[in-house]
Image 1 (cartoon, rainbow over the protein chains, first blue to last red):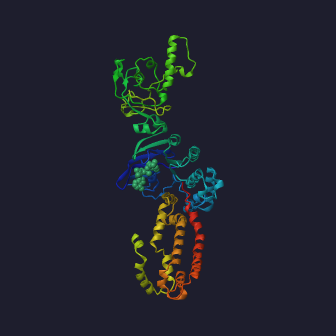
Image 2: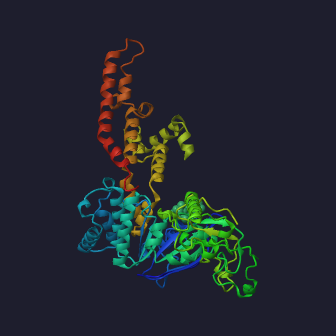
Image 3: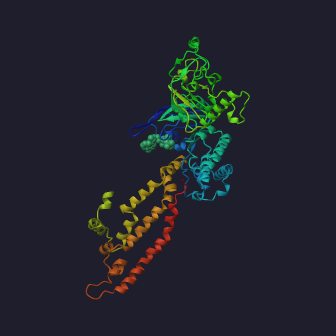
Length: 383
Length: 167
Ligand SMILES: Nc1ncnc2c1ncn2[C@@H]1O[C@H](COP(=O)(O)OP(=O)(O)OP(=O)(O)O)[C@@H](O)[C@H]1O
Ligand SMILES: [Mg+2]
């Protein structure tokens, strides 16, 4: 186990800067996931840590050893490539053993380690086969086996599951997570897959164009994205971004739950507030009682957010009409029941924290809604 | 190197002849055989380079992480994988040497040393009637070694080409 420290690492290919002064601290025993759009430099970063790519500036340290000039083989790490990169001419047994014999390890020890890895990864029946006789998932396991037999301080994974079909990917994900539990080694893992990132990571690094956008636990990134990029990158389906100008009234529910003290006296006076931007989950959006009564609504009052499917709304309107005629009437269709809880309410100001006025009122001029059921959103006219 | 590939054989023939004359190799098989073994044909160099290029770089990198020196990477990883390219080179080299006409014509003077193409040529005579029947029979016979050679080695080509440690 080792920590990894990058300070102000830069990389250019020719004249093109790829990584612009990146600093990152990976704690010992951490499962760090790198995510980011294609071409943002994830693989490059990983390869720099591995020592397969020179760095132009900065310092990389593994543990307390500066490894800038250390060749890959002496950094005591293993890497699993996206393409597996098994040696095609060596059997499943020889593939992991090859690296160990280069370390001048005695034969019985090599055999013991290979056998251990085979048992953990359940590839024992395949030991004499060549890589071409294996399925994708089996190759994947052999590649992981080749990585773990060295018992390194640090594992690097470059999208190891992206070549597998969905089902196998889930299975391998579970196995990888189990492996991490068992070994507890520091792991740095590049992926495109949101689910992998969210479920496996202890921390996630969101990269964009060679810069870190945010580092945090999956929970933090999901609930408190620091900027629009992270908000739209994390989460599936993608969060909806609206350009919106909300009006906040005290007691309205587009704004903060606690009204700004300075505004408290302006009760019921609409407040032009070019803002009220929210990144929010559907379960964060509920219509307040007041809004439903047509009173002092924030967004709902503007009739621009229709988060229920239109059909249901119509039905509910019909039910209302019936009930007006006969107060005793109750629809038995569950969809006609009024939701017990308010339907819309923007609750959690999720980004723009840095600009929060002290009362959770964020400033960027978007309203972002993450809507799970409606894709494409039926909703979403701007206020 | 492109240049060497483009220079016609006939241009280098005379300087080559002089060189081999000084080495005292004329009228032996050496001038025909030794350059082939040294892979002096630019074509094969291109063939090999092209082949190395299409080997995934991850393989080298995996070997690097596994602690191989550059020579060890070449010896233990790249070389075994380039068997198909080498076989191809061997087959071509063999065929070209076997059916070479000009080289033997220049370097061999003794009738009893003549190679097959030269011998076949002897069936054709300018003054008397050419014996086409015998010549074609011999031609058929003369391609047998090539076919045999090919049959033996082609299995390496096919076996090696499936590059399958990769996805
Ligand atoms: N050898 C190279 N020479 C020049 N540019 C390169 C080289 N390798 C990568 N790049 C550039 O560096 C940038 C980052 O590449 P990198 O492979 O790190 O992206 P990535 O984040 O891993 O993308 P993906 O998710 O698609 O794998 C890309 O814009 C790419 O074009
Ligand atoms: Mg990549």
